[in-house]
Amino acid sequence: MVLNSLVLKKINQHKRANKINEEIISSRVRVIDSITNSNEVMDLREALKLATQTETDLVCVVEGEIPVCKLIDYNKYLFQQEKARKSSKNTQKKLKEIKLHSNIASNDLQHKINHIKDFLEDGHKVQVVLQLRGRENSHSDLGFEVINLVTDKILDVGKVDIPLKHEGNIMRITFSKK
Image 1 (tube, rainbow, N blue to C red):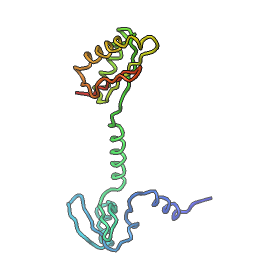
Image 2 (cartoon, rainbow, N blue to C red):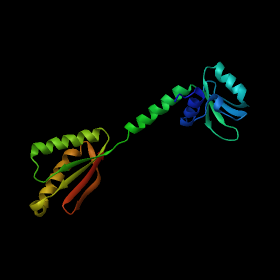
Image 3 (cartoon, rainbow, N blue to C red):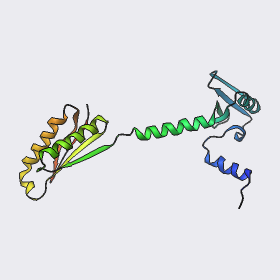
Image 4 (cartoon, one colour):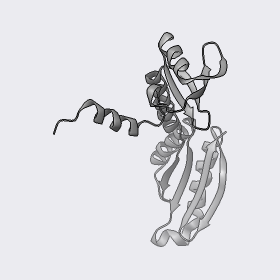
């Protein structure tokens, strides 16, 4: 089935969040010009003529009795919105979790500490979880020693955000950047 241009135009109109140019149905609009910083109410035809003269699009940003429209390049506007959405998505900081055991070797512990420091320098929060298994439960003091050693090594880069909690066979402590 071949779609004609009118049908394609209607499909694209429903995908858009803002009405642009001829899609605006009000007879009068408030036009905001970003170049001259003017803000005036005018007839829709005059606004469309002004948009063609300045080679921009008339974009409705606020619907209402008198819609508020901006004279901007719509493709550039969409690109900037997409760019802002992606950058806000990337800047979200996450909680990273590092798991340890009380019988961890010293070089393995140093490797985990380096990972924790890297995460903290990137701005993430880090939760260190030490799980005691089997006979380790009766020697929880070894777990406390490991947590204290990690805390001492991390304090130059980060700070304790949530203090040590010992819940059953799990010990948790959370660090954040200084």
